[in-house]
View 1: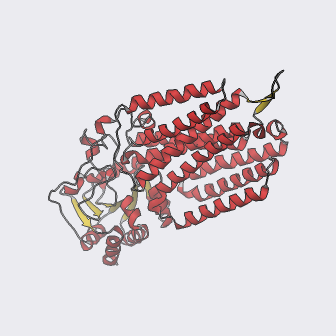
View 2: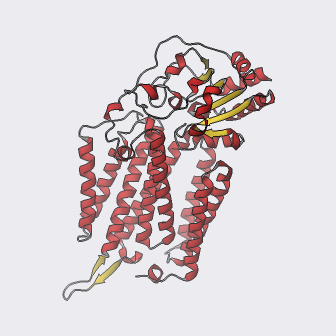
Length: 479
């Protein structure tokens, strides 16, 4: 076994410890919009320390090749991050998760094919015949789990990407006997990992990988668009655990720490998201297990009378209000209306109107989507409130201005048991004296595939137009 695998210099352990502390501080910073930028920089510093230390102490066949590969990958990441639209951020995150999962599979395969280079094998010399390279039993468990979790992350993330990107229907795709198939496949993977400790044959290793790719696909396709924010955070957790498992295989404490932090924080976030959507955490990670009753609830928009308003009407109503609560959603992200929205809010505040923003935990298509957009437009952090902190204020609010949000404001979540969003906590915008609802047209429905009965209520005025153009028109009338 290489010396670095079991007796690393003290400065290396210290460097990895410092990088781990940086990652913990990064997570702490990312918990609040005010400190998120600092959290990102702290995480980047920790990763730079970890990568630099690893390159310094590990035997690498060709350092220029490694640096060149890092430069290519970093360049692709930089260009992609600069060009990507915020509306495409969820599918980009899913794509990144797939890369982490595939990286874990490839590292596991490399360690399996050349275990001596990774310091996880012992050479056994029998009395007769050539010597045999035997992978250490504990390393086989670590390798099997890492490859399995990585493969599940890869194929599951690919399906999530296709659904989010519109290449695959966002509706649940329900296979017959899927629960039995899923449980049987998972049991087979675990049994093979246990058998792998006694037999390191090629067929065992590659069957584990193959079945794991399949189960990742099967677990995600039954999950509908309404639950996609949970899927994103869940796959984030999987990618962390895959990295942690590979950290044990590589004897790299930085990977173990980082993977464990990502895995545990992703799992906690998934649980919080499930609670916010009134979903069972176990049912989501098991591929929608137990969700048959609400899986097929998609419906077209209802042809009912509604009240239509104009930018002039909206400007007058809001300028006369004491308090306006703005509820942003995915439609705001699509039209990039956040800057015009902040300008509108500034003009209202000059008129003496109190302005607040209400954020649902799953507004948009990934956790924190709306917070990032509002921060991009320099909306003051003290004006942004989460659902549980502001829901009680709608009853005392003159105007609720809903811009592009649908499912998170739908009262059907509280009354219609057959709805796919039933039981999900929603923003009580219908309790406001007047609801101004910005929507491109009456023909579309939310990502969960259900119409919003709020559109047809007496206190709702529909503002049908592109969100950015409508807000800009309101700004003109306020000015």
